[in-house]
Length: 472
Image 1 (tube, one colour):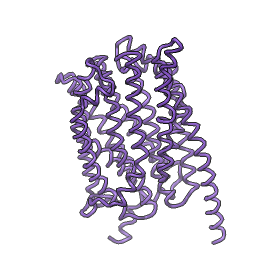
Image 2 (cartoon, rainbow, N blue to C red):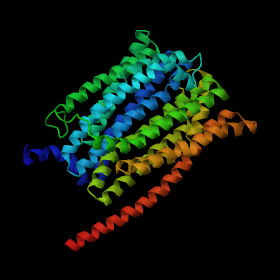
Image 3 (tube, one colour):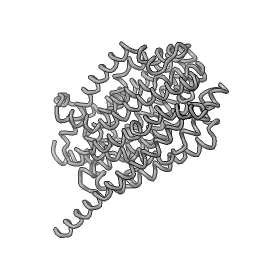
Image 4 (spheres, rainbow, N blue to C red):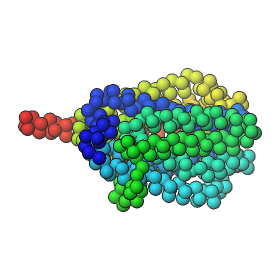
């Protein structure tokens, strides 16, 4: 193919280094935000239909699956997030052949990891769920749901991985359409399978996997188009050590974040069960879904920022890197501040969408007010973590990913419930309060690291300006 023919195909990627930053962030973030909001609604739809159609204990059973879902997402993000960042950087460096090979390696890695995870977890599913805090009253619901979800795990990994590839290669709208299609199909199938066919919580799981299968077929069709810059072709599927190593190194930050989230949710479930019972786990499940809605919007902003920051960092245009970071932080703060207002002013209205059980509504509303206490600042912490990942600074991203979970939240979950018990208060309050406290401390650490990085970028920007003046 001649250079003349290649140029139009590369235009979507090249604009990342030339178009106005605000326009680019809107162009890339808006589809991602819509997609992530839809993805969050996708999870909430399951919870709402299960809560209203099956019962409050089914909500608790569903909440018990969150650690396993986080663990599955960890392996998915290990490949997807790492590959997306790597593709953006290679496109910024005009290394199109390497970007093409990354696509092929994404497919093979998702097949290997997805199948391996499915086999291992299905073999030990009951012991895993009991370890996560299940009781005889809730394990049946959790087992029924996860057996089907795990059977379709390869589809889930592949769907998420290829969506990341589409987004990072200049097709944020197509990535958005894939997610929206999944949500719409799931929302249609959920009531049909849960109520119409009487499949209960199994119906919700079947609807989830079927929706992803349909969207995955559409993604394969898009990436089979030879007119696309990145597309399936012979010779790209052999695993290459350097590519695999780079994907895993960059993807290690979101991987470790999801793994620690899995471990943390286990501790939360165990702590709430010990101090409040099975219904308290259901309350956390509802609060988690509501918080996740706002977190997913911020993740959409981050996904929009990622190719812009990665491309311009690869092209050494540091002023544009700083600009997109500042705009993303401002947007994320607005989103999480909105979540804070809803969580503090109208929690009962928000949680009542999931259940009609009066006690579950009461417990969920109390928990939501506590968890959302420092919500306005977590958007900043999330953007900062993703920013370091987007420019390939994996070690800094990993540290920030782990700081909230391991340095602050873990000690809080281990000690605060007992401290509250010794003070004559309900120990479950210690579990709830450990979450906003860790948000505050992790954001302070992120601020210190970002200020230091800002100084490095400003110095590099001044050097670039000086060299351009000398050449002129």
